[in-house]
Length: 243
Image (cartoon, rainbow, N blue to C red; front, side, top):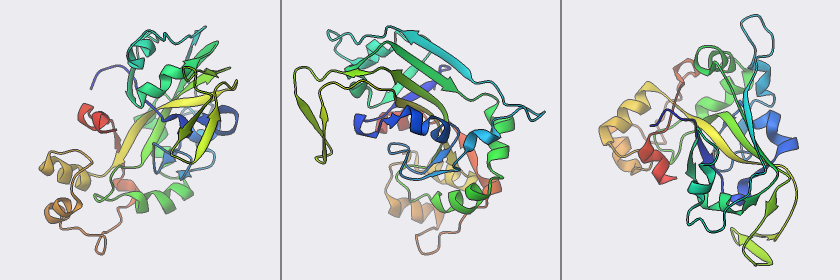
């Protein structure tokens, strides 16, 4: 992993309305990070983003004005490198359609020592998140520690009047609005899951049968971890490549 913040670009159909979700997704635990609004807790995660004195903690924030996608660039990751200090993972090709007046970011600070211990005491987190943890999951739940937002976005799909997504919806060629298009994530794991995955040396997308054999765990006898066992860590480069 590099030392730069690493943002996962979402598929366009999973981009989030900023006004509706900025305060709900930043700092939340999402069950499916590629579809973050499907399941997430708690409803007001930023209530835990406070200093040791109980005052609201500042975010790490920044912006890039007059962002315009370079259509001559062969890969969108080169375009996004104009935002210095960040690296990009996931559906980077979808970001090639971004054109707008402003891209901004907001990131939590003091995550490991302050924010995460407080969040684990939330009643909804204690009740829900342990049931999301299993070595049989294709991907782990994640803590959203940063968001990337495009303001006054104009989408350009190179002459197409509409574009299909997941064979379920059509999106007009151009719309103007504010959307969260990328997330900075920490995966949620346990010491047991980490040891099991290290034995297999094949990242999160491994055969469940082999995991169960090594870890002596199946869906029937899966024992839920306690909330105190939950830990956060970054994704490896190999895991990012699987996204």
